[in-house]
Length: 257
Image (tube, rainbow, N blue to C red; front, side):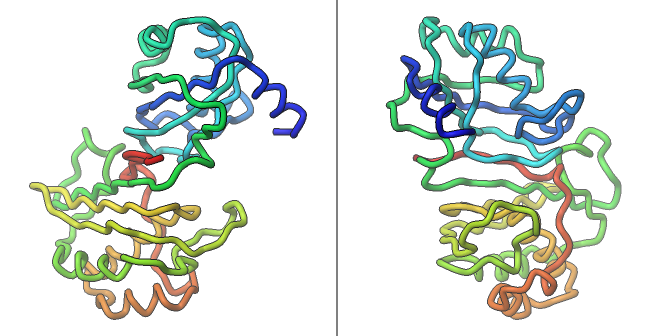
């Protein structure tokens, strides 16, 4: 957004913050795309424009990729629209498709930015670990039929805790930024036929979670050891890490401010 355009947006009377959930299966990611390509942001901005009577431009906490889901995406926008805040979620959900939902709407301070004010994000990755695929979870998990050693997965994941250079798990094509991040949660747990991996950090690089998961799966398959995983993290070399895990298993769970 050009500086003069950003100033125009911020001159509006209200700064609205929304928490949004969506099933990303049918979208080319969150970030606005040129039609006919459909992204979550396109749909949200169109509906919010109808409700508020303004041309709406959203800022978002994260630009999830095609096929990635969210329980707790956070967005904000400036508007002169007068609809009461307690009616916004219901009005939006009456117009949104069933795979997108506004779960909370609040008035934000003038300086709040869903992107720049974020302090920590939590992501979940779901692996379906059984012999046969599940057609009802094909868009929501990564199906792996081989047995995975969850204890080895958990041991390797602990290596991620603390402050590290995560260049080994950074994909090309992301915005230029420091690769150093602090991770304070890297949890692996089994729930029936799923392995669920939860990561919380002060920021994530492009494809970072999916690249971490793809490498951890190599630990679970005994292709590499937890000690090898630690070496890969320290190397700062994407070529040493595993393949990128599929988008379908990834969820943006929450954003903390």
